[in-house]
Image (cartoon, rainbow, N blue to C red):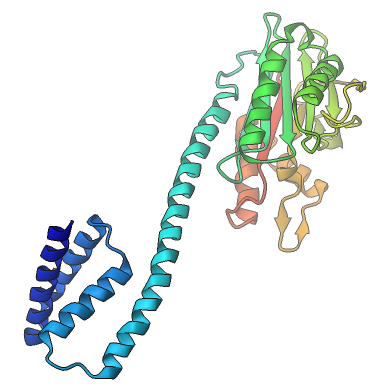
Length: 337
């Protein structure tokens, strides 16, 4: 250690002497290289000030008392700076670690979402789900059974980050464990509610709407646990209606009964499920009206369901200056035949 300090002292002395005499660019370049060596040797700012003063005293015969006093003050400043800098580096390293953990959680969260297309001629399905940050509080789900029945859902966890991802994992695997109730929205929500009430903190809640489309009957059955109302588009009248969304959010009480509703769907009709990141889109200082949202969806009703969802997202993203204030999920299910 002593040899290292002696070597750095000698190097700095030669560099400072050279610069005082020549004021050359080469000496300045050497100083930059020396700073890198300081970092490698874990040399603190106050040690550098002390080194500079020691070398300066040696190469300059007489230093004014004012100069020496100024170095004393600078040394104290650098001690405070060094402590603050070390704390900053520690916080930066911790932030990098947290970011890395969030990246892992975000990948895990994404793996929970369905990644296969539904290949049922009777329907056209489209979905766009975009988090406002790394992690999303939204969850969507769709599936089809051997009879061509389609199940769809959108949920919103009241909370963000890793806890939200864990809640989504619980919802997914709870739903996967209830295959016999996939065509019974009210019963499925009641069972999910019991799972959620037993397993999440009392300050966390989940809203959810679940629906199934039975192509043989051309009926869409759905139930809601306090979720944002979606829309039903009726092609024959070219009108949008709000979906009924009565029902307590998941997790408040283990004993909740949910009411089930049904809608007859004709060719061209479609269901819109969404999260509040869609309906609470801001223009300047006010939210978009639901009628504005439905009009925007109607603007693209002639397109495939996926194209409708993508175009609506792009327009709402543009309205918000390409900075989402909340997680965005829009799911559209249209009857083809």
